[in-house]
Image (tube, rainbow, N blue to C red; front, side, top):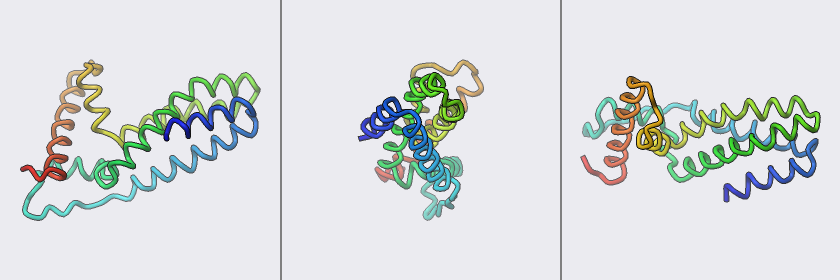
Length: 163
């Protein structure tokens, strides 16, 4: 489904750059604003029976959208990753057609979409970066490993009721 959303905007923007770019940017603004507002709305975890550790509570509160809406969160994360990929086609195309503002906005959006995708699906991005050894900074790597282990532990406790 997410492929069709991205393909629709990509093809429409390639065929009619002036209108397609405007519609694409409006979609980006609305979609990413919605995700940002949902993320800003922080939650407080009620730790009844001391089920979670302090570190797990921090992770759950930091990535609360992922824990509250796991299926939608993963879907939106993949849509954002598709938006990032379409940037490589649309930015040069808009610039070639003389749509400088749209091209720059879509290019800048590459960085915004990446941050939102990580927030929406931290499990995928943490595991991917650790397992493929992409992080060279040792201190950052240790922090990501710790966050990954805490995230996995919280997920087990939440969905599998394992302590």
